[in-house]
Image 1 (tube, helix red, strand yellow):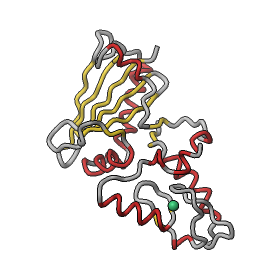
Image 2: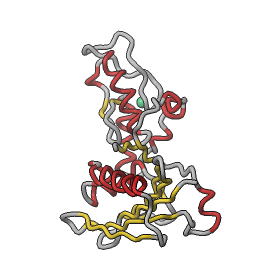
Image 3: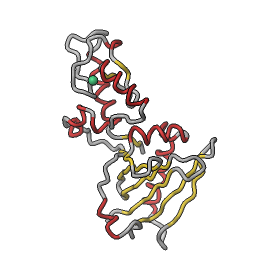
Image 4: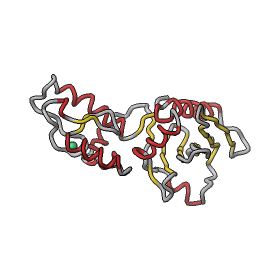
Length: 218
Ligand SMILES: [Zn+2]
């Protein structure tokens, strides 16, 4: 299983195509994915984004730097390329996406502990490595394939460079996660064949930092 962060992965896929136009100058430069204005013809005059592995225009590079200093980056969902429907061109791949949009909010109508929750994991980072404990929420163990999917998701999640340590996690939260009313808590959502998945991310030191809740689909 491969997990991608949406829409970061999408922007990077588009950029892989766009950057081919620079040889090293582009006759018809592609549009800045962030603001929609044309990039400079010369690749090197443009700026490397701090939030995705793509080049953006000089003005956007300055804006990112300013916003970064104020800890209020422009969410990738607000980038021109995403707002202009790039998302619809998403190849339907087998990759599992982490997104800021919860497609299963109805589950929480019965309360914060939906009956379909099979298990959750709780992980903390001690400065060297992650420590994880598991909590089974139902009497019966999930069927083997579903259990395997939990394992695969969990392994792929902690292989992400964004989950290397607490600093990278905090950066992921700032740039790519859904904020909450608590500035140290964030959400991300995902979906696999068997599960809806809620990631609750907490950037406080000496606390639990990653909760992964697995809700069995109907
Ligand atoms: Zn721009």
